[in-house]
Image (cartoon, rainbow, N blue to C red; front, side, top):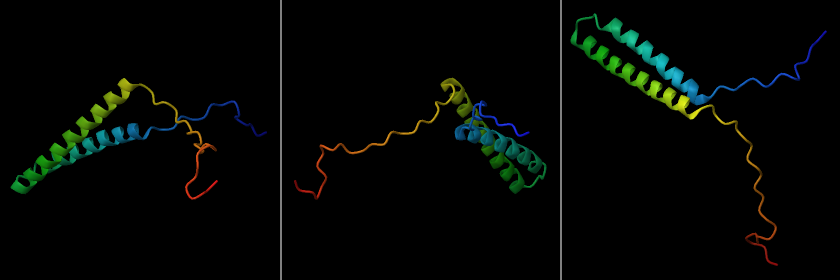
Amino acid sequence: MKQTNQNRPPAPRLDRRLVATALLIVLGEALHWVAGALSGGGSDFAELTAGLLLGLAVGMKAVGVVLLVVRILRGPAAPEQAAPEQAAPASQEQPGKKR
């Protein structure tokens, strides 16, 4: 017997800003790991690259945390509402038409 879930509320949609925030934090962690792996090389170029990656990682994580705090302080996102159709009032004269 097939059941229908007509009484079930719709699944919540993911907020793009929340996904971007999580992505920034995860990519920052990944860059931090790569920078740690490169720092043991000893050459000047490896140290420069590791420093640049570490700076990017810290910056990405900081931006992600700030965006997350702002998102939490603002509260849940308001559901998107369809904009009402804006039809021109009949009393307005359309260009190019004469009465």
